[in-house]
Each structure stands twice: as C-alpha cells, then as structure tokens.
Image 1 (cartoon, rainbow, N blue to C red):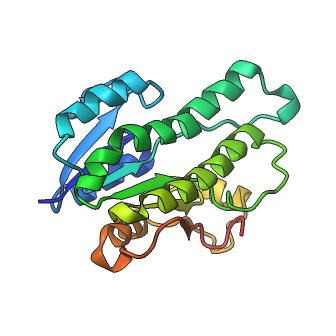
Image 2 (cartoon, one colour):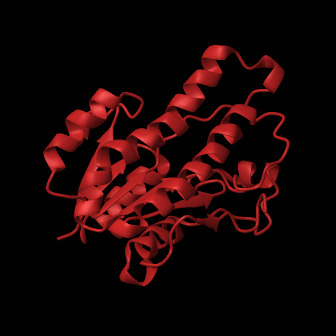
Amino acid sequence: MKRLLITGAAGSAGSALVAELSPDYEVIGTRRAAPLTHQLDVTDPRSWSQLMAHYADGLDGLIHTVGGFLHEPLDACEPEQWRAVMASNLDSSFYAYRFAKEALRARRGRLIYFTLAGANSARAEPNLAAYAAAKSGLQSLVASIAQSEAGYGLTCNTIAPGLLHDASQDQVDRYRLPMSRTATRDELVAAVRFLMSDQAEQITGTSIPLSGGWRV
C-alpha cells in the first residue's frame, strides 16, 4: 500500500484528506499539539528530522496543508506577525522538502502543497500582504523543486483552493465567489487523488486552482 504523510491533520483540508484517503493509502497524519500518528512542529527542522527518521524506506506522497493565515493591513503588521506567517507557510514548506526528499525520491513520490488562490500572480494585497508574500514565495520554491527533482521522478505541485468546504454561506457571500459556493470536500480530495495518480506523472511545477474562478 502506498504511504502518504499529511501535515495539518486537524485542519479543514488535512482532516478531510486523512479521512478520505485512509482506506486506500497508509496515511500518516500529523499535527502540532495533539497525538494522531505523530506530532510535528512544521516550523522546527529538528521535528522534521525526527519524524522522517521513521520513514527512511520511502514515502509515496507528502501533502503539506499547514500555513498560518493573517488578515492585517501591511502598515499594522508587526515584525513577529510577519515572521510567524513566513515560518508557518514558507519556512515549513522548505523543511518539508529538505527532510522528506530522500524518502520521496526512493518511491518517485509526489510533493503537494496548499497555497492561496491567485498566488501565482503578483498583485496588491492590502490586508493579506504577509500571507500573500509567503504563498508567492512558495510558488517560486515549487518551481525550483520541480526542476531539481524531475530526474528523480519526484513531482511537486500546489493546490490553490478558495474558501474551504467548511466555510459559511456568509463568507461565500462576503467574498463574492463567482460560483456562489466553495469547492466540496469530494472535489478537494479528487484533486489530491489526481496528483497522486499515474496520469499526473508529467505534471510538475504548477498549481491546480480549486477556487471556482475566485481571484483569477
């Protein structure tokens, strides 16, 4: 059975993926503070090193769903807030690659990150400056990983959802989602299943939008 590591297993995306993929994969769910299979502080390289020591024989996929959100005007963003957003979104993504790459190479695995819808296009982000900057940096990191790892058969992509399936109708209305709804839980899982499939072996260095046209 193929083995998947899913970070952020307590969150909206992570919990859905753990539940839906467990019948078909050996799923290792992680979260920071409460026990599932493993605890993992994604911002701590030592925590990554300790975790990956258990899986030196290989991973078929790593799905990194973690990333702290900040809605704050740029001129009100404090240095510690900026650093926390960068650590949880961008630093953690580098650590995921740095400490899992040998395990993923061993099985020609898939590295999948979650990003912000529209993060591949630079734009003014008055209230999302730190978060958007981190996610834009992630897109650049993904492109570099994809090119560096292609020779090992390791693919690297992002999924870019809008609001997640557990968002309220008030949120859907407030953000004026073009399709008037979020992606469903099933659609989220299907996107991951596709990137894990043999049919996606040539897809790397790109982003799959799952936002129904929001922020395009």
